[in-house]
Length: 234
Image 1: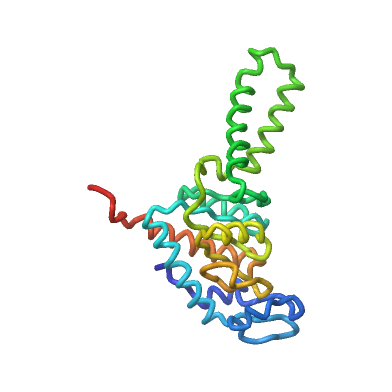
Image 2: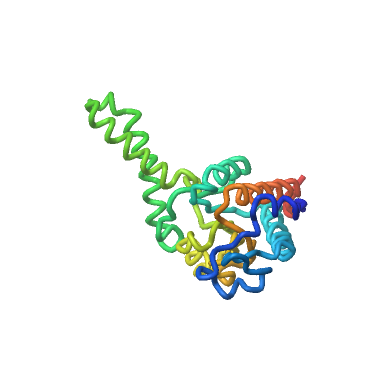
């Protein structure tokens, strides 16, 4: 289990919530106080909830679950992608496309279309495409790669999800909930803790705060992957 450093949580500003007028009353149990109109998280409770969430992430990784991590906000995008690629996770770091789960067949068709376009571009010169036509094709490929790059290999729905900023990623939250996909979520004072199965209550806006949380998530995944699944034969 990754060690959660309370002093580090404080140093990165994980305790700062949103302004009083922008809070969700369901998050009150995770709060310590209101100062200068800003909610302040009780970091002892954050630590406890995070330990539980990280344990579930480790368990999912140890069981070789297919994990999808969603982190499209700019403060977390690069770190999310880095961790996903490091551990072989599926990821979404651009805008969540409605129907990614609930209309998965259509999304999969769009992803498969990308492969066909790449083949078309590779043979464009042989087929006599003009420079303008090749450029247009390349731009279409780039757009699709930005949309689907992290889920190109996702042939089925994930077994487990990690969502950075559940308030921002309402589309992903709703689809996961609708289909019963177990989910860990970083939830700020304006979020709904009932949206996910395991809550990490903390500041989801500060880049350093999210970076620390993602480092702990990375450690939890790495720890889980060291455990050989029970059904694995020697």
